[in-house]
Image 1 (cartoon, rainbow, N blue to C red):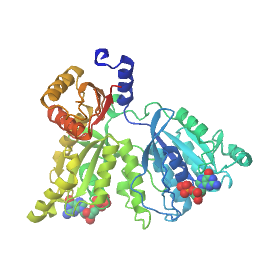
Image 2 (image 1 turned 135 degrees about the vertical axis):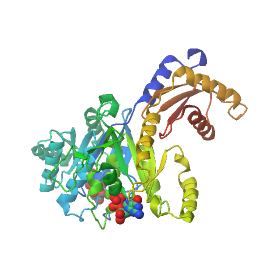
Image 3 (image 1 turned 60 degrees about the vertical axis):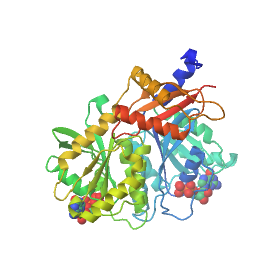
Image 4 (image 1 turned 120 degrees about the vertical axis):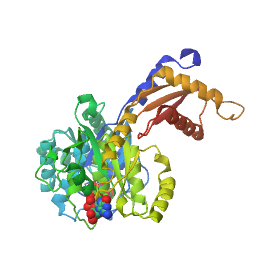
Length: 455
Ligand code: GDP
Ligand code: GDP
């Protein structure tokens, strides 16, 4: 490496940084109006005003990437929860429960000006039960005079209240230091094979695509409920289901089975639940209703799984209802709408008739194998060397940036670091990704490529 102009420390640092697997997840929970969204914006450094006065605003995304003191993590924003759907206590509890379930640590936000309410106490009980590390944020302490209000929150029994002003930023740095202490370096939720447990599947898709039908079909009588957290409105439940002679863990199936009809906030609720399930899973099986046009919501769900870095299978359901014309248009839609994830194994199924159920497991296994693929450095560099000489980067400003060498820094999903002599354009990066896939497979998995340029 040294003779290529990179010093060893840079190279090792870059590999270390890229090699980190899934990021730890921080959930921000609390009653409506305590300032969760404002705090999340502060944490992720978002400038635009996204705090809405209207409750129940539909949001596309509920997880964001953040960085503090050089460490990256994800933040789950529960601020968009519609408060009056289930009654305030139930909705706060449900919202918190989902977020906590998916999280490695929790920031519990209390309005210091109001003090602890009964709803706050209810969330404290949930937090105790979940046993995740908690950082208590006493919000709306906009100046020194509010510090005394914050001190009252010792009474919650969650340790030191961190006085903050989400609005003005006061105290948030100290709070984030505490967050970093609470978050594991790498997520605690160890990945499947590492601990020898069953592989985890999230069965996701927009309402009515057939998730519960499919789950019932594959589960038959085999199903075992393994993790029931009783007592609140929405219990995340993982079920062990045997398929193709192997036991799989379908995560968060309660949300699938209990068809909750929420008038408002339903989209938001669905996306929070989907995000939580995806975070817990290794592979996402995305169910699409093939009888209808592929929708924006379908695409968002696919994007969520890709951004989370999970293995992915796309199952087109309700195949029994398709006529020749619909089949024709479906293929066109798949090309245009899902071109970016053409690498995902595809199965055409019918939860009603059982068509092609037996193809689901091989597809999932293929995706997981792609997700775990590791290319030895020697092979990778032989491949890169050939690629670069056969298809050099276009000349820019009289110079020709070159990929000098590369390594795979991690798996689940595969992450590569390439070291280059100059800026590598997006088009050329995509070309490299395409060729990597042709050469090494990576079926069913997103791959990350980062490029370090020699200074
Ligand atoms: P959420 O429902 O918990 O997500 O709360 P929001 O983030 O939407 O905030 C509710 C209201 O409290 C908004 O009007 C915010 O501007 C206000 N707010 C949030 N943080 C602070 C703060 O630190 N100080 C003050 N004074 N107001 C705040
Ligand atoms: P979920 O909201 O995604 O869990 O969807 P459901 O499993 O509740 O299914 C929604 C509707 O689609 C129900 O009326 C199902 O009977 C129907 N459905 C599900 N799968 C199929 C299928 O493969 N073929 C047909 N024709 N209908 C299906």
